[in-house]
Image (cartoon, rainbow, N blue to C red):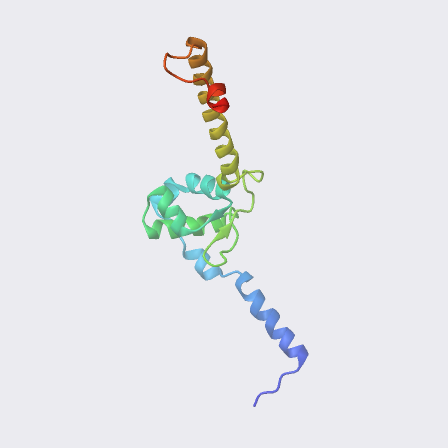
Length: 150
């Protein structure tokens, strides 16, 4: 059985953690993006910075491109420093456009409250119009006070 001391274990764990950060010049030198990838690169950059994340699937869906072009775009964005290395397939933008963005889910209660207020205003408007048109009680109807006294 292999015995490992604490120092060797720490050294190996650091080496494993640092491996993805090492440059791979052989892969970087052979990469030549397609014409389609260079055409939609600016859109991909804006999308990844505005969403503050990027994945090939997201680029493929939003830009309506095929998977190979999406992968090329992901690589171009990574090479130019627009996004970070992917964790679980999703990269984060290095300089997001809108950091003070409030998601739609957070605004839903406000939107519901606004909708209810508008509906109440419309109902109140119609009620006041109906009251001003005719304040008389039709014949044969009983006043509310008369109902209570009987």
